[in-house]
Length: 116
Image 1 (tube, rainbow, N blue to C red):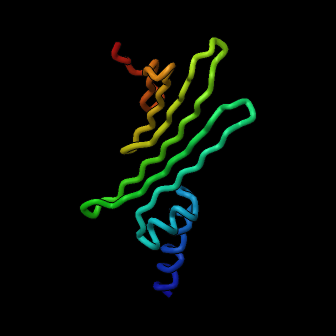
Image 2: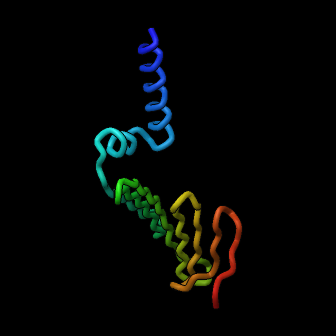
């Protein structure tokens, strides 16, 4: 009876892990132990391009996952605007570039100073 409860607890933990990451990433990482990179790109009719990248790797027994996305568009003044978002080491980072130059940065929702 105790082992049946333990099995249920393990299944619940697996389900929670799969829900948090998405079942495919959970399966590839936690079940199969694979390192991988997944990239998607989308171009809208107005020329705006969106790209997402997720990479998973293991080094010295420590698993690292980095998720990134970027959107590129042209604003009303004809400037190329790129917004990059990523999760790294538990921090949410968002950067805005205008014509290739860093214009603004947020770490965990707090705007930080940009050198210039």
